[in-house]
Image 1 (cartoon, rainbow, N blue to C red):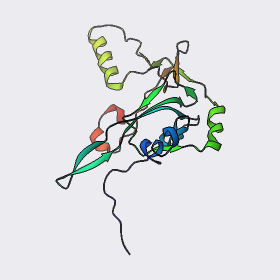
Image 2: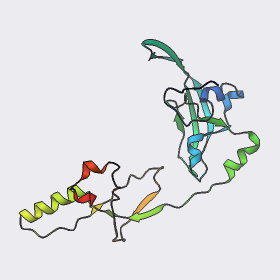
Image 3: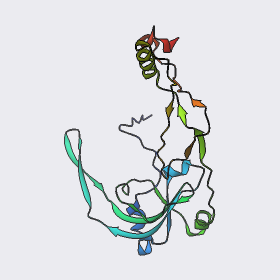
Image 4: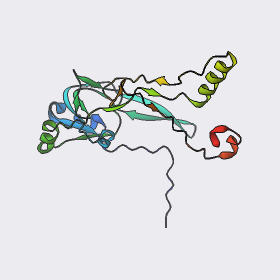
Length: 200
């Protein structure tokens, strides 16, 4: 019985590179719909409609394997798409180039394209409180500093500043006075944390 030993980094990509797809389609796939497998983990639909394709010079990158430079053929391509991410369409065109070599793209058959273009299921944004607890060490430093100066203990809460982007599905509620706790997990190696108040 033969035993296989896999060496190297694993990945979670499923599909073909973008050049493998558009290079085999009429008009380089303009008007067709492609998806990335990594985006299929979300409940909302994510897809890209090809608008324009331009070839680019072939990039040959040398990677050291066992002390020898081995040429790796990373074929990239410029593709402009109308991108819908998690049910929301991006304004303007989105250019794919640096990630086009990843074997993670799939072509949607024409009879299934209607499922992607007609259904727009968008989940609402999640609302969270606008404040969070201070980190434990910083909290202890502030309380010690105020005690040394004879000042009353301050109201220790940090205002959350969320990055509003197309990916972020959270927004803060300034009317909510609740303070989010910091979840400190139990350490896997307790010997390094013996005697600390966090471990009690």
